[in-house]
Amino acid sequence: MAKEVKERRWFSPNKRAKGYAEERKAKVHQRGQKEGKELTEFEKGLRSGYLQCQSDHAGLYKYKDALAQGKSKSEAKRISKQIGKGKK
Image (cartoon, rainbow, N blue to C red):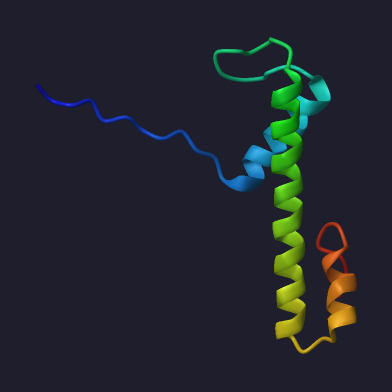
């Protein structure tokens, strides 16, 4: 009796964030078994939390990158708060 191997379903973080942002705007599930059904308050919260987490990771990465380039802490903080690639 062979045990069935389950596979994990995953997305790269930027693709998951894009999908979550689209679902939050539409207020309905856009894929999977619940497609077309309205998001619950809990599910809306999960999507908001995930999107905020991605933003935090991007900011921390930019901050550490700026410090590694020899920028001051105040300059690194300013750079980390910019949305998008920004002009350096």
